[in-house]
Image 1 (cartoon, helix red, strand yellow):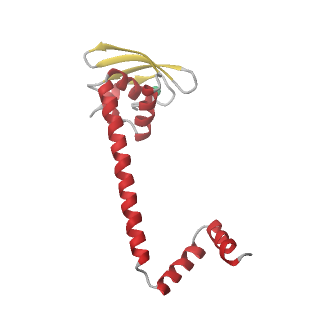
Image 2 (cartoon, protein in one colour):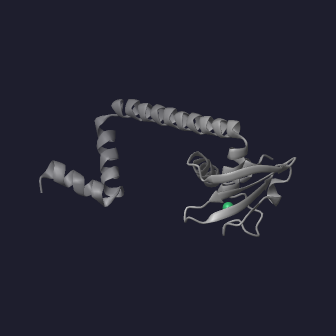
Image 3 (cartoon, rainbow, N blue to C red):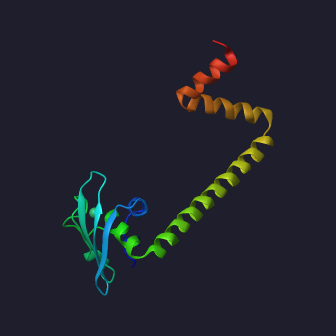
Length: 151
Ligand SMILES: [Zn+2]
């Protein structure tokens, strides 16, 4: 399995941001499947990172999150993207596509709600409104009172 897919979604994204913002200070190939480099952390610390593409779980980083564990951290992801800029570009495009897809789905759902509500009968609308007011958050109830009952 590819190294970045062993990282959490959060670490993938943070690793991409680290790479993009130039936190990878050095990156060199040290073996067929191995790269080493220095990546600066959010606290100004510099971490020593080694990634192994053939055996990603044996990759190492001196940050507290990954040190001594078999975790793929954001620093490893950042180093990976520094070694393979094309992969960084692919990743960025995948993220943008996923966001656009989520946006489309949200819009479709909103349109379905608008359509559904526009066809509801008055009694059903009143019932639904009361349910939202009494079961919804308090601010919503207070807002309704202010807007409509002028208290
Ligand atoms: Zn790390």
